[in-house]
Image 1: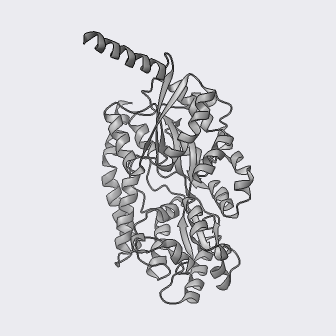
Image 2 (image 1 turned 90 degrees about the horizontal axis):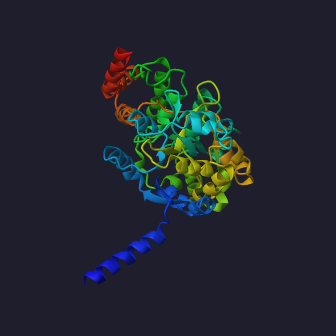
Image 3 (image 1 turned 180 degrees about the vertical axis):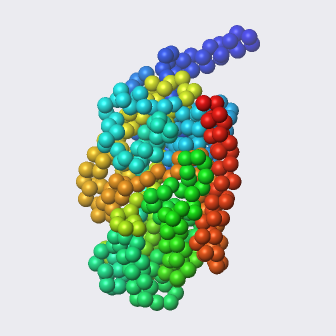
Length: 421
């Protein structure tokens, strides 16, 4: 019996040694959602080009990803590298979980910073240090009904807020009761976030206070709430919308602020005979072309990884324009490098062109770990304000009050840092 047990153990060890040859690095990677599935299709070519590295990809649902990352940090069980949403990067940089990448980028000519959309690249820079390389990008802009806009008397999308307002008034007059010019779903903070990013003043100050009572944000808030309160947009959440694509197709609203994930949905769900009736356009700003949010995900290396060289090889390989295009074909995600946009599949796509233009004018959301909590507070306050008589000053003051409470620990930490200097 003992001899049989030893023989079985030896056989298992032999199998293990064949499956993972001595000296071969196993690189652990976490990726989320559809991107986690797509990267698995790209990895075999990387492993073939790098025979000393085996990549182990774990696909994580987006709904679970943030908590899993925090648990991994607390339990010292993070992988070597991961896909990280741009809005999460400040949080994990503040925790000290991420390895800075400035020196690696400087030593890798193939990763040309000048080839990246500047606002997207900047979203990865925290306190002057680079912690991620953009993997794919998204931003929000206008999807609009070109035919309805033309019937209302306009042959181009809005170029500033004043023109946008005139167009919405004309559309509402044209479509009549029960239909609207625009939709700003009350349970989405992103439309107001975009309008806020178009202002000169930041929404969060460097010393850790909300800045929602600034003249710029109050201007954005007045435009947003005024559109809803005047009946140009309905005071509803997207949970009250049965089918956003059918209702857009039926002309129940003509302007919708959304992102590139909707390109494929609009192409599939709106009948072929009416595909020419919708279009995309960059966001109008208060006085001309406007900014939007710098969204998407980046590739990061965790500070405690023992395989940072191998992880960087994979990041550099995934970041070539050719690989970005392969990834785009698998996911429809948009590439962060301008050179990839010269490919005919993007350059000749009339709906994608607006995104290429908008990506030249994107701004990172405030680079504080608390931003998502602040944005959620902004949403709940403005959602309530859409149904009551609070004026703009009162709404802005309430958002500031809640933001300051959320940022209290940050101010305490900033104070301790200054006292030690």
